[in-house]
Image 1: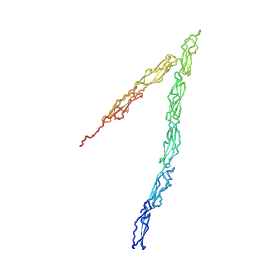
Image 2: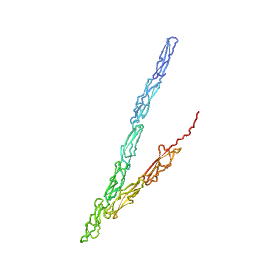
Image 3: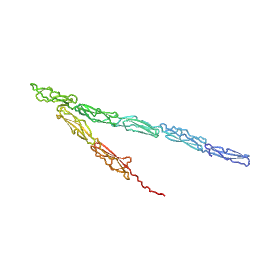
Image 4: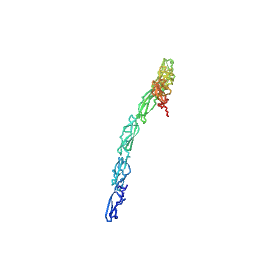
Length: 576
């Protein structure tokens, strides 16, 4: 029979054997074990002896077999979690207490496993350690626990590039930069190395941080970073620089007005440089040579100063003789055929330079002249060598500044009035002054007109000056859209055909042939579906020949006023 639960023995009960003897006398009975005794695992011989008074002995025996069917009690350690050994993809330092084995037999049982505490390498991940225990009766037990090796070690990045500073590529706002990429290692033996920007990339001006990231399969990461600095040390380039020029002094002044277009420049940074000049683009210069210089500066303080040109103001204006004596008639001195001639007032002259000119006469003051007519020519010469005589100096003429005018409402012309040009002549005699092709008070249509004033003095010396009158059209075209339209859908459908009169624009000058333009581009009539809460919007634009644009808008609402139709309605029914 089997042992009692968790015991190395069992209580065995049986019925004692019966005994009799021919003598009929009491027999002496002896047994080795009693029913109800406890028997240990194994075989036990139970012997009964019966002896009669005459020492005759009878023996009976039987064997009690106690077998063990309880498995050993095997208790494994708890699950173990540990990290890898530094720099290795597995770990060697996992130790644990051997499982405890208890068996009902009381025998000492040593559990067995293919793993030994402190003497096995465990790879990253989970490993199930199994122990077996078998007692001498062949009863077996098994237990297991899990050893989990986690990788908490970050990869290692080697040879991370150092910070670097470079200049932009000539003519570009970038620089192409390469470097030797770093390397990485990881205890797992597996990793990926990525960069947000790779070598050979184009870097813009400024500071860019390049980051490399190494990651192993267990989401352990390591990063290394370095900074790429791209500097712009390239100066702007002038794409246009005015030429040197010569101008005459302004009539009556020792200055000349020069005008030029502002220089232009470009920069590799693709940002327009700031251009600063030593003089305004329209400037009054004193007579002589003046150097004009422009500088172009980019956002990174690179400066180009190579745009220079010379303004030469030439004084080609002759002096003005301001007083000249009247003709003189006199008589010879007594008993001579000549006389000494003087005159007043003394001849005077002015010059635009502000320096009194030299005055010379073909006959000197106080000269002795013989009988007859003598012409005295007066010549005034300024410091620039300009010469004036009383008979070849043209008038000095000053025109108005250029004028811009706008057309009035609904008009294609405008009446222009202006103050006539001012004129001065050294002769003091009458001057003929007129303008062409139009006069003050004339009507001007939209265009640019060059008005020329001409002055002619008594000696047929001619002077001219010009100014421009520009008439522009800034009046918008006139375009009127139809009133808003509301219609119901056609019977049985969700739309209706809508038509309207296309607006006809007008303008004080002229409308482009393509006006009016519909937005959206449709032509009535148009099928329009139920609009619901949002009306259909129709717009028209008109543009005149001067580029002035006007528009108008109207709205179309299509309403559904038609009730639904119910079909197959059941007839009246009577039930009794």
